[in-house]
Length: 97
Length: 499
Image (cartoon, rainbow over all chains, first blue to last red; front, side, top):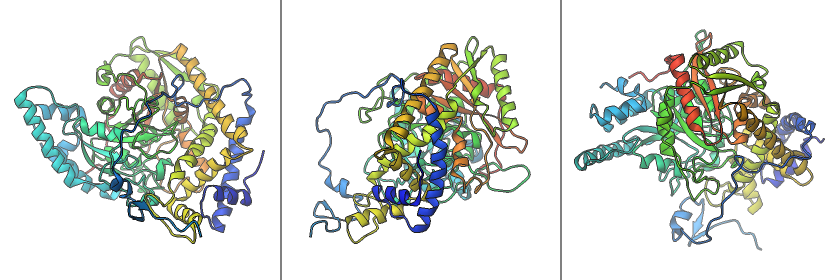
């Protein structure tokens, strides 16, 4: 169907916000092409009449829950693991000039 | 009792002896802390919490005294020392999924499953290693380094992998540095390391144990389960872990059975299916022979053996390697270097994301994020992701058909015994094949268990897998217990804690 060439790896890395060096791009292009060729055997199957399975186990759907606040007022805990925080906020590099 | 006697007890034995006051929880915990110390070269634990464990053991003894005074019964795992896989968030104790990107992360909350275990009286000894983000079958991709299997081949000294991803859990339990451990299983991550290390491990039905507070890998496949030395211990532990949790939208509201009561020692009249497609390529003749032996044991015990067919088996692994990376790429988007974990600065926000993720994730995780991003991207979604979800339905339907003819399935757990650290390292596809016999069960969301059943010629443990109908862990445990009785497996690894 398609190949996982170096340019494709680079494009996926950009979409996934992953910095990869040139060696990694080459390496992953080789490996991912091999994996992609292998998974393509799925196209042998005629699945026109098959409903995709999206639940973890057949017969169980997702349940509804009430939309209400049941947690909160724990700013210190939330920010406790932040690499950088100040005055109750996360700090990030400047995004607006 | 001596420390070495204490660490060799099963949970069921320790529970009964604690109840008869033959020893205190603090002695049991002390013995396991000594074992944790003695087995440190195996690298199973990534965070040891010995002091906290001793304090908890004293509180456990106090609770037992109190209940004795007022009358009543103790919690089911009162005083039992356990290990928790590093995929579980534990309040106030570092939880990193064994990834650099979560270095230093200390959760402000406790996962539901570990909280349930604590509520049932168990005592955490520490956190144990896994493949980074539970992605792997060898426990060699952990940021804390490879974990070593306590078993060795009779004829060489090479360090073997414990399997993965729950390698640290399996090693802690096999080497007696914990009585049991939590695992998580997305494609075989409880059952394969259990088989490689000669212990028992059960992946419950999807939705049986809450996923809340467990680091997410592939949310529609991940399930937590018990790892222990016997089917009975797995039953005790599963009962303490399981239960409906409103905080997990996929947790299913069903009563938790008394799993231990299901171990009747009786399989007479049960129909055991043997799927012909499970003679996997590369399966060793010894594993085939063990499978035949397992069939003979169950037949002797009065079960009826029926041949069944699961025709889409060979498509399960490729479908898994589309679905799991797709879900992983989406789940792992949260690691942005902004709110928690490791940040690597950059000239702007995008560079900060890219640098943090580029340095924080290891090669296996990056490979899966790239694959997942690809199969979900515009133009490829239908051809790969949607097709894989349809194949998942076909795999699930295969099981439904088979369970018209039988009550449970018996298969080997893995195509080979444990391999040496470094083997398969350069070939991701060869590594992925470890999961060929276990992954089908995750796609269908069914309960599956590995029990130790014998040794190969080189003295390495081999496991048999029992697969049950959805929500029927009881039959799975019952059969596992009977196989244990029949096999009489009592071999011990060379790397057992020496105290």
